[in-house]
Image (cartoon, rainbow over all chains, first blue to last red; front, side, top):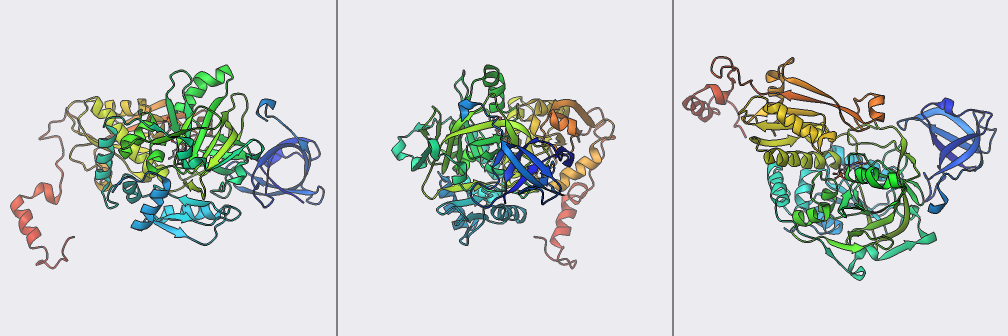
Length: 84
Length: 482
Ligand SMILES: Cc1cc2nc3c(=O)[nH]c(=O)nc-3n(C[C@H](O)[C@H](O)[C@H](O)COP(=O)(O)O)c2cc1C
């Protein structure tokens, strides 16, 4: 199970039951903790529905009480290839 | 005492004078180190030198490098007990002296080249990048550092302290404001042409190099370091671009600023004492190479409520640079002071009120200068008010500033997204507004019959009565006055 975190202005941005694009950061312990990636994912407020957990922070870093489970469907690469 | 030439010499000097403590037990990079630095700032305690960092053997941290005037004095090679006006005079003397050009040293003489990561080895997570405050948008690589760039046409070099967040192993994002030197170069040149801008981030600088990187001085920073320290700054060529970086820095991160790609940055604990600026897509730095010293020390500034170096040092240099500007215009000022607790928002200017409108002239110069976006209040007091004595300034502000005639508001000025009082719209578009508090008696008042006379022990009694009372003070039954 992976732990992820997302920053949103409004929890409503985390629409359930559809594919959404999110910038999430890993909370897994280790050297890469807090690094980001852009993904396509599905989220659910049913914490058992998907394999990974998603914690939510609001605009100024406040922890939201809302918790989600998340399924990462794939990475989204926005960076132009010349920088890779 | 000579000015410390590197962060290492500075740490040693601070430990020797009791202005830094060596922390030998292991400290976690994930919040714990940040919390130590924050507490040290709020208690105005010695700077923490953390020798052992969880997950990062061989690296250390030095936090709150310049968050006290004592450490500022040490950085200038002065007696740590020097007073603020003494430190200020020294800064003005040195920054008005002849420029001292930097020297270029060979790679083999540059400690920052002791370890080099290139290609697939490049990974910012190999550095002990701290999570400075819980809830920050990321781990911040650059909190006390210099981002080195060069103007593509004019060729002048810029070192600026612009915060940098680690987004992934090879990407950082940062808040480079459009009115800063780098912001201007990006907006005027690189972005319209779609060209990437080479950069190098230098971390673990000598304290005077760090001071230069965040000083709002027009002097190119490598020369300014020379003037401040009295000897040429030692620079060395980068591995992957043409930039030159301080040879004695602890860590160098080389790369390019992407003109066509942005990632999110923030939120972050800021010098105002809040997290104010919204998370946004900001200037994005792609990393191509990392070099670092053996046993490298990462420097950390933890900004928040007073007092940290963001407030202390910036108040100091903004105030003194404004002093230079006002003097260059021939305005008869007695001095300029920013109290660090104003989080560098209030300029206090003392002036001999020799003509009408002088306060307004001062405010317009201050707000209209390159320094202007960083503060929004100017308080002008007369030459008899001690600008360093808050009690006197506060008294003048509350008694001499006419609520209808003495407060002047300037709208639509340059601002930053960091102003806590600004509306969300103003923050998003960096729209500022400014205010002048004119605490001078108007010159069209009769000085004898209209201007109130100050009622104080020193002003209303004859010297003879004052001497009698002070010499009899203990005889009256009071304890001696220190
Ligand atoms: C700890 C610290 C952090 C700073 N962070 C930023 C920043 O993120 N963005 C910015 O534009 N200025 C920042 N500043 C202010 C600049 O360092 C300062 O304006 C400096 O003069 C560089 O600007 P210039 O390029 O206009 O000379 C910071 C200053 C300090 C002391």
